[in-house]
Length: 264
Ligand code: HH2
Image (tube, rainbow, N blue to C red; front, side, top):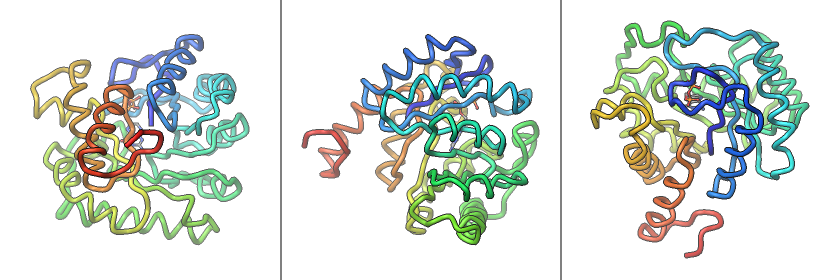
């Protein structure tokens, strides 16, 4: 899953702001490099980010989704706002990627009324406060229990199990140690039977491990993606599509696993 941030302030430093032409070029390059899904976001959720209103978010993402429909890869909308979900689905998105796991009033209803895929992500707190003092007694068990509860809420609203993906939410209300425990415990999420999405690309835990700044974390991000897939992740959400795809192509052959579209 290639990340397209139609934002001026994303933590990764690769947001394409309001430049539609640049965003479309980035999307085409990601698909040429082997992305199977494009995740489009119009609001940064990095720690301490300034919130954006729904109208502004729609203005950022809808023209981009409309421009990318011709690409024929699934388009994911990265939002927690029901109004943005609705507008993005109408424009052609087929996956709702919600860092808030459809907890906003009306979000489950919008998802249930569509036939879109849903990614339910765990977050402790809000982007404004989540890194203040994240605390868990058992991070893997608590994050998993939260996701199971959100799966049940979706199922009760009539959302089929085949539409649901889960994500432990790396970096969202977690210390570096919490993130590493979640990565080591990924098999517990895989054991739910739901596909697992992992988003570790360029995140600060990788900066802590390597001492590198955000734009210098490509190798660390690729290693994290491979570690996640090796532990059973089905989708990796990445900024560096070509590097990740190449590494996975080699790793998959060596591990005798398969990757769609890659010759064995
Ligand atoms: N991480 C970010 C945003 N959305 N969605 C899922 N499902 N999982 C993640 O780990 C995840 C996500 C943060 O990364 P990015 O979009 O690059 O940064 P920003 O929020 O600053 O735009």
